[in-house]
Image (tube, rainbow, N blue to C red; front, side, top):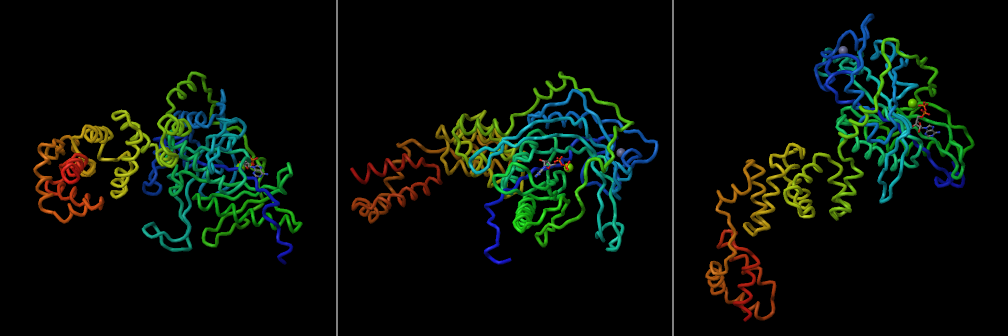
Length: 492
Ligand code: ADP
Ligand code: MG
Ligand code: ZN
């Protein structure tokens, strides 16, 4: 293509809608009592129901429905008074029944929305529907070391995953750029983490994303032809696959060619999308109500009870931290991104109500210690109460800032309460001028040349003398008191 014909990217606009699948962390599967745990030996968690053997009868997992309601409420969906399951028919080697139980006509939730922070503004993204279904088994293509065969000509299938409760969340086409799509996914992931219904780990497949993207000339109201890119497994892939495909579509449209409506896949290595099939339509799946399953009535009492037990969500937490506590935006983001870290922070503030100081310690020293050990905040060997009491000791002047850092490290390593560490180490801070004056006198007498420099106006030399006093008191002297005493002695 000649440069003159290169389409200006800015003449076109992308329209993006996302379909997100999330595995629910219930104990058992969607329609049987097999364990839904991730990571067990292949095919060790299966039964006639989830293997799709003839004559087996599925039973709806009440907890999975409850999790669906919880997610639906967190995403401001309307929860259906009655929800039903349908069969979605298609062949796949890891789908032994020949159909997937899903919800087509009567999804659990509809008409929700998510407030997504992007580049300092808030974008509202509509949630078209939220429904429950079951996961399929997992095909493993080619030789897998440690499994039955390492022969690359074979594919293996693990049915542990078949029947694991799955939730699908379908957004409205409200997103316009790859960056907005990623911001939406991040916020959705955080909200779901807070609800506790899933561990939403993209790398373990408990969160999977299909993106739908079309391109239209800027200013056109009508949507362009939809391209779906299936099964992206990281935020980075979502961003790259979208960027690639938007460019591809812009070039087609600008060159006067139609964009075929199709399903594509993303090749991580080559960073391109490629066509895999024509886009399927709902009627291709021959949906029909599952005759083995009853309709589920969802009483308003049940919904109200689930609503009462919803935790504080990221939105509200952000507001409380920023507006209520006056924390800087960057600190708010780091805290809110992790429910465990936010919970640790809140619990510490409950014992020591100075949020700014707590945020500094949590995001600074505590995070450093946790990261060094590869620990999640929920696994911190130092409980929030200990951090709160440490900060109180610091406030009361019992220990200095430097000592506090040492105590934190030791409490973190041993699990001992800060007061105990302070006592065992004889770490009490010396603030009594009467006790410090003799040490100050001695240091001044020993360094006449430094004293001269200070008298000559070299203020920085004071630090050296303070350091000497600290050394002789094994770090126990209160630096402010030492400074005052030195000043009085030298400058008066
Ligand atoms: P399908 O049933 O073919 O999967 P849906 O209408 O259910 O299609 O939409 C699936 C997803 O695609 C939704 O997230 C929706 O927002 C998005 N979407 C629909 N039409 C378009 C379009 N023309 N461009 C971009 N996204 C779209
Ligand atoms: Mg779809
Ligand atoms: Zn089973």
